Image (cartoon, rainbow, N blue to C red):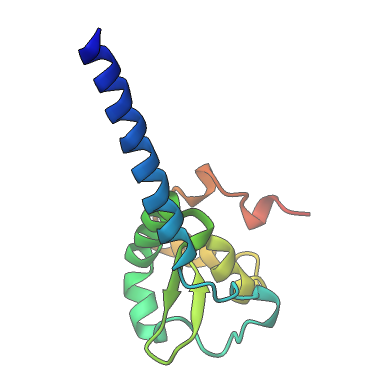
Length: 126
C-alpha cells in the first residue's frame, strides 16, 4: 500500500512539474503579431525568386512539418527581419492574383502535388 501511494505521489509531482515547465515556456515565447496576408508585399518573396522556383517544395514540406508540431506558433523570420506564418495561406496571400499560379507550372512539369489533399484548391473556389 505504501508503494502505491508513493507512486501516485510521484506521478502527481511529475505532472505538476511538467505543467509548470510548459507554462513557463509558453510565457517566454516570442509574442510578435502574426503576419497579415492582407498587407503582404508581393514584390518581395520569402526567398529570392530563383531559389523558390527550385526549392519551393522543400520549403513547403518543412513548413508543413513545423506547422503540424507548432500550430499557429509556427513562424519564419527572414534575415532582413520579416516574419511569416508557416502556412499555405501565407503563400496564397501574395500569389492569389492568379488562381492557376501553382497549376500552370505543375501541369507543365507533369507534377501532381498533394497540397490539395488537405487544402482547398484555388480552382475549387468560386
